[in-house]
Amino acid sequence: MALQIRSEMKQLSAVERELSVVVPGTEIAKELDRAYRELSQKVRLKGFRQGKVPRYVLEQYYKADTEQRVLEHVVGASFREAVKTHAIEPVANPQIKTAGELIPGMDFSYSAKVEVKPVVDIKQFAGFELKRTRYQVTDGDIDKELDSLRERHAKVVAVEGRSTAQQGDLVETNWSGEVDGEHAKGLSGLSYIVEVGAGSFPFKEAEQALVGKGVDESFSVDVKVPDDYRQEPLRGKTAKLSFKVLGLKQKTLPALDDEFAKDLSDEVESLDQLRAKIRTDMEAMAKSRTDVETRNVVVEALIEKNPFDLPQALVDRAAEQIAAEKLNRLPQQQAEMVWQARGVQLKEDARPAAVKQVRMSLILEELVKREKIEVSDAEIDEHIEKIAAELGSSVKNVKNVYKKGRRLDELRFQLATARMLDRVIEQAKFEDTVKPALG
Image (cartoon, rainbow, N blue to C red; front, side):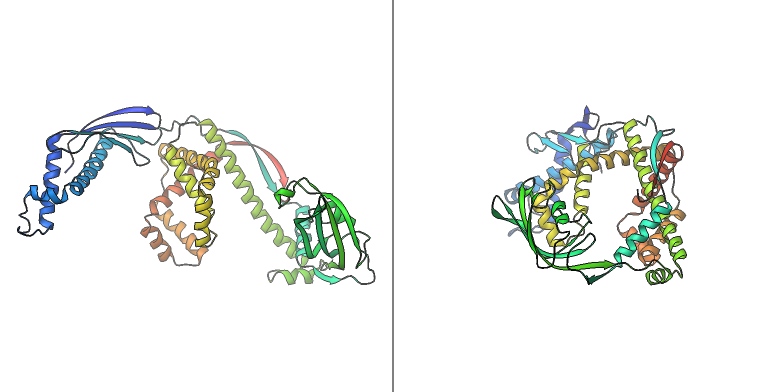
């Protein structure tokens, strides 16, 4: 049975409310009586039959604990009643401020400050005029991918017939560095391979200085440590690097022919078929990239055109989830250590993404209601079948996971909002800039 209460609501901001709640003394008395009757049925005290222990005796032993439990029940139950009375939707636990203690027959009052879901006033969602990039696969993209495949399948062999380095060689070297005449930690390498001309060695001057140097030759070169070098204290400093050339190797690329194509894939029999397969794969990736960027452009427009205040509790929750997800790939013990050491900073770094995520979720939720977007049970089943196929699991197992986690409603919401966003995209006008898929 619901508590009888009196309550008033004050709007502190667009997303904050303060409830002033009064629980009549008669209700307090009834709740205390009920609590002590239940306690009497449970406790055993010498000299009293179970269920017959007088209340004044129970108060001698259990007054503090009993009244604390009653207080928590009264506040919780009366807060729920007040929320229902004023039709507000809290997004986090309230900040409760009480005055006094529970006294039978006397009114009990408290205030509760709580964040609520904002009113999302949709001002525009259709007819956006936006710019976007469309990615298309060119013959040049295919050639680049083939070159990349040849590089990945290159063989490394010793250089024969010469002993001095030239462009394209893989030079094996021992090297070390000094700053202000002293050995610098973080500036060294043993049997380190430098591919001359590739630009992958942090010190470009030193990379080119290897050209013309012979095996067993030693030399030094002055360089400036790049501003993005992995050892932060060395960035921007002038260093003297000393090298000794140990050996020369070179890459030999496989011939670009039918045999190369067949070695790469069992699905093709010729170089032409390989090119066709690469084009098909790249076109799928180009479309996916275009779609993702299009959605991002539309999301930014929806957020810009439909401003509203956000409850910080929702942002905090989303930021914590985003930060935690970044650690999912780490072993549990390592993830816990990182979280303890850097959790606060990780959550702060995640706040901009969290703000965007919460805004978009609330906008799409409102649009789903406004446009009456519905997802049928058959569509849910179809989506679960796709998930099961991707996971190599049975439909029954996947559906059970969603049911046990009570995630079917969440899935329905995700599908509805995705459909709503597709509708916004369909109704938008785009000025397209076309770029190569690998551009």
